[in-house]
Length: 199
Image (tube, rainbow, N blue to C red; front, side, top):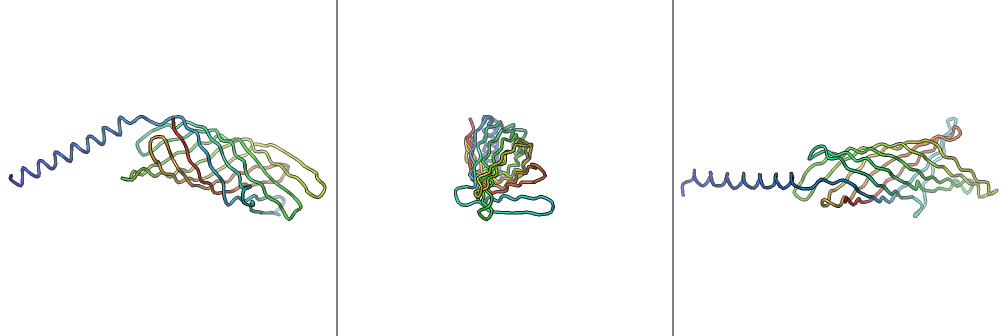
């Protein structure tokens, strides 16, 4: 067989494989509804008022978690946008055995995902933001006085994830939620690990 014929045959086989791969990705059903779970770690709660701040880390097992349900809008092979509702337990800390502070919140988040396609799978980077209602609970163990307030707050974060298959993502990220109650700004920051299941 002549070299030119061999080269032509190789090009035809390569083109056919590329077409099959492209056709497969086009025909792959888009992901839509999902549920997710994230477990927090390295949780920090900071209180700030009048230029004075207190910061404390959560003990093991008290860092909190997040549950989410949302919808993924696919705008491009490399870009999608998640819109989700999320419930978060924001963790609990103790300040010098004088004050216990904990929090929880319900947020609506928007999360654009930028995908990079590799042979072993798709990796994505996703900055995100959300607004919602944040509840702050404060209790003094000394005199057993407790207060609870709920205000509008927000959260910002960034996430690195791996698309295992059409139905599953795993991710790691960092996020910080902030709310102001009675002139006291409370910030909840933590890393998290988790996964999502797509229907």
